[in-house]
Image (tube, rainbow, N blue to C red; front, top):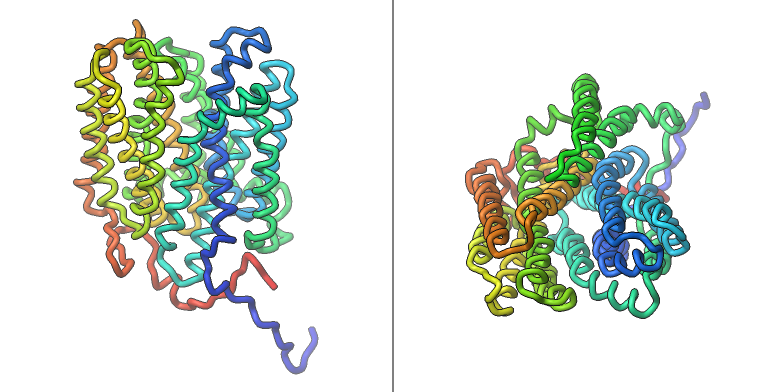
Length: 498
């Protein structure tokens, strides 16, 4: 060891004067929009794909379910990888997978290749949201903020909602002008732009410690057995749910046989992938997951169920039914930004539950003779529900999740949302089993009323639910202590070392 005067260290690089400038947020918004746009654009390509590949139209449903399944499993996995390996690295890897999926789908010659492409796209797009939450959380803490400006989280919400709203019209234009392959190939230019922005503007991750960067060490840190157990059990559960009302007993058996030992394994680990004990102790986070699942069940029941009803019972064309739902997505996107501007939580969540109940009551009043304006008004109410629940629950997630688990928690947040979405399709299949009739629609309204009441109780009776104050304080247990991040408000940006 050398002795003598200590070496002078170079000054650490501080955060930019505007930590959440557009150069930081725009790549995150573009990435966040990749999953919902790929979820919705494919809808207009299913029939042309079936015609061109000479397969039954019903068989193309695998292209929808494969992306949902891949996303439900990959979201928390990507979050865990972001926490261990670095959010920027995982974000860029996800973009590469989406690019690869777009090429495989665009060049695919059979349904199997297209299904593989959708799985790649599902896995790749799943990295964006949890990685964005990790990057935002770290940037806010290093800037001495308990939470980022409301517009930052709101922008993530708007990116998802806007792309869902414009996905079907964009898909219709693309498929009509350039054929169904364009629904896959559109990912090529979009990912190229996202890659360029992310590499140029997102802060670099810290260098990996050589002692922790070996394959075996990484597998242990991310809890690879826990991830695999979660993936298999979740896949079996989703397959079982999507098969209802016809029960897939084999899938249910696989779920039980894999889930039980996985839970035992996770409970024995000190740093598990799925922290059951931590989730049980953090009631605010668990209730956030449940609210998200319940309200998305309502929103997507309207998107899927009312579309079927409008076409079958009301005699509308597919184009007309889609256009009547377009204002719902537009209202959702437009309301998200002002709702998110103050990082409010309790108010938007109460609005979400109440409007869901109002929308469910409206559904029970609709008949096949109702005018189009009545249908639009009902869907507009659910547009408010969508905006309020996304903004409120997203901020609740940010504040309730442990700082070192924000990536995994964000991924599980999306997984619960997918379970709500999948359950909505299951409920629609059950209530419309004998046809999309007025009676089936009214039963759907009753189901959504029950879900709305549950969401309202989870919000109104939750004393620990955070209520954001103008000063930025929160009374929620489990939210980060502002003192932890304000002891050194000028802490250097470790993700972008000099």
